[in-house]
Image (cartoon, rainbow, N blue to C red):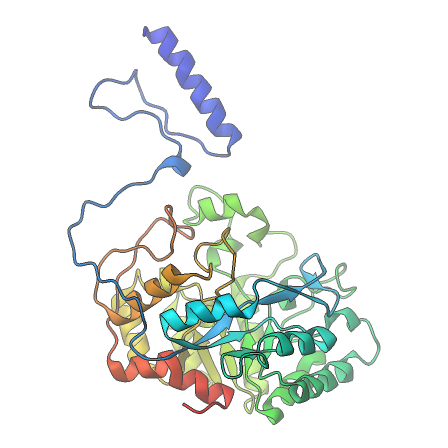
Length: 401
């Protein structure tokens, strides 16, 4: 191959890469034996040369309550807002129980149980069919948002959901990032909108914890450019970006959430995804110190915790009574390997929590889905493991530990 032919071939490769949204690094000259050739980033799958201990943890050391899973979803969503009570289901319960038994999972909490008739159907399908193995949370009924008496409608809906068997309330990032004054159009509704105050109070009065997710990783609020460490993830899911337009900043969302915690001290809030700020455990620490009614889960964030293992270990030591295990597990959620429900997902969580292994994958995926790094185990004591695996969640849910 002469130089002209090689350049023509390199140009064709670069054009194909551009069509895939990836710009390969162009070599300065024709490839020579021993020198690298152009490679699209999405095709880069390096194999670690490290020779370190690898521990397989097939079962959790103690029984587990997975506080954060998604077994049902709204049958109709418009611009990120659930519009009907009807549900779709990711899996029947029997195959889930088989995995649970293998992995020592006592109970799965289905956070997205919906409301109204859909909630009752979900509870019958899981909780009542397999008592003790499934717990269901309710969600706000945003389809009635424009009703003049929505504030009271929503507070009453919490009471009915509790009577129907719901054990808590789940707040998706719909509130703060999708719900608007005209439901799907108009100005965004703030996380701390006072029209929801009776809802938070109702949860406190009924002893129903609020599992709240109001912000995504900070990278999702920044330009998707060469400085963004989640460039690949956002390129694959451009609708996950909240940069620009009329979206609030991460700081503004978290400040609004903090105002809710302050206004409703008798309501317990489990702030999901490590307080929605796993990249900044200093901030999460400050919030936990400030708000005794705040707790956190780990869901889909061991990729963040595991790359700061010493800081994370100290965090678990200090807040061992206020951390619950959650995974964000979704049956058949193969597009999101960091949360797809299967044996491997749980084995990675157990390895992170129970071992001091070094530099291993945080998700069952050939390419790290959230960022190109690996994680380290934090080797928790048995006392802390019992709390994180089971006792803390059991206390939140009013279950026998």
